[in-house]
Length: 444
Image (cartoon, rainbow, N blue to C red):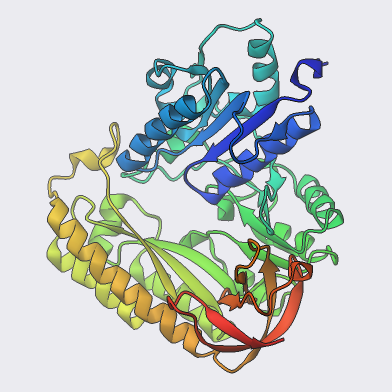
């Protein structure tokens, strides 16, 4: 039994880098500490405990993690500094040497964060504890997470780790092999979220389509079970590998009560040559087939796509293949990010290297294509009535929310009300807002 008395009345600050999965985990850590009597700091307050959940998807991410740690130490002198997440798993010794860091937890250990924190806080642990003794194959713990933090939507962690080992990626080394809890446990977490007032839940993980390796279940089984929870009005699937999107899943989502017409599908490259160098598990023909199948069954579906620019082996001709494929397909938005060299990855053996100038130019072309595709998609809904889940806004500011198919909507401050927070309301959409990032509401 953990003695929580030492934590009563303490204040904590949280900082998350990286993906939605990290945000979900940080929110859950915050809820655990709140249950122990720790409250989140308010603006201008100094924290007694700081928790930084790190990312290591790129070299830039690593640098941002180090900067965030040093900034948190400077802003909260004397606080107990905890660092966890992917960068903590990959570089625990380096992080432990940063002045002010007290506790470093790898991927296996963060599932027991409260135990480690309590021991270190009470002086039972070392001043700096770097836990990175497990090899990747031995990272087996699963830290459940279903939380919304200070946001409107809940994030439900349904899976962790990855077995794909793409040549450019360090995430399997940081999070271990694919694993998941039972469907029954996830259904119970979703029910609790609904009881707390949650109307929308986002399913998140590292490779969620791979769900079931641990329990012998399937992702489609999970989707069907969650769809039966009548108190949850909306679900979104955060990201699905193309080779794990079955036609049965697409057909089910097309007629689902609560799963929204919204998909996020990583492509990474539109060149079959580059996909082979990446050791991806699909080719462009399969990717095209899945996109067209989704749009056939769900014409209104929003489809986001991850694209990596400038990876080793991406010749100018390969990039043009990527650009052409994405130009032709009815995708909605591109998440574009430049390739970053990662120590220890197989990609370093690929001889063709793209310079930074070409990476920047290629990224810009794809971002411009993305902007046009998103605007074209949004334009289809001008002057239409749609149901929007609104999110809380600052006093005197416009509220924002999303339609079922993820069109971002802005409700002018003159029409906004705190009563609309976390409410699904039918509205009429007008034209774009000032920065073209959303459609304005013209009437409720």
